[in-house]
Amino acid sequence: MLANRGHGVVGTSSDTPAFAADAVVRWWVRCGCKRYRDAGELLILADSGGSNGCRPRLGKQRLQVLMADAYDLDVTVCHYPRGASKWNPVEHRLFSQVSRNWAGVPLRGPEVLLSLLRGTRTQAGLTVTAEGTEQKYRRGEVVTDTQMATLNIEHHDTCPQWNYTIKPREPGWWNWN
Image 1 (tube, rainbow, N blue to C red):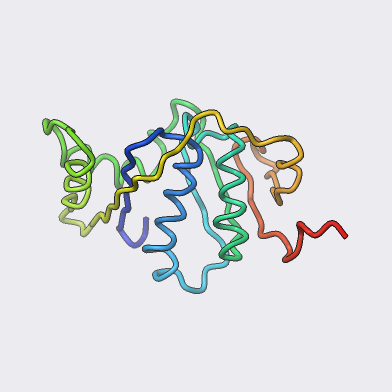
Image 2 (cartoon, helix red, strand yellow):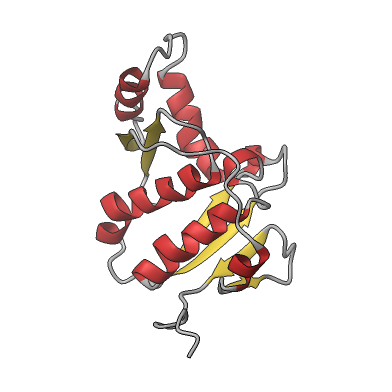
């Protein structure tokens, strides 16, 4: 938000919790880790519907493995309640401008979407990068209770279902000896 930069990921597969988590990882690898080299934590403001909802377990598991564990980051996720995304600052700063940029243009494929995302700019200096992915995401992947128990999630006192921090696990956490 403060850097006035946006990043979009366009896929050709299903919009799943795995896709949503992978999009965050792609942003981190491409932009975030360079801009915020010394960051020990990351805040994600997410709508609470669909692939980035507060209930899907797969997104939490992937954020644990691909962000918290891989980059030694505390990943705090705050979900807005359904219908409240209009209060999400990303909605105002980024998505409103993207929508204005592609208004009236037939979105007939990933290359068109990528071009329009990349062409989004404002007089206030907002710029957007974008990338495509051909990765296939399957719907309905299940994360078991046993797998969930291995995640290092701390639920916040305020709205614990919507607000939580995924902390890195200790190296060797999987070694049961």
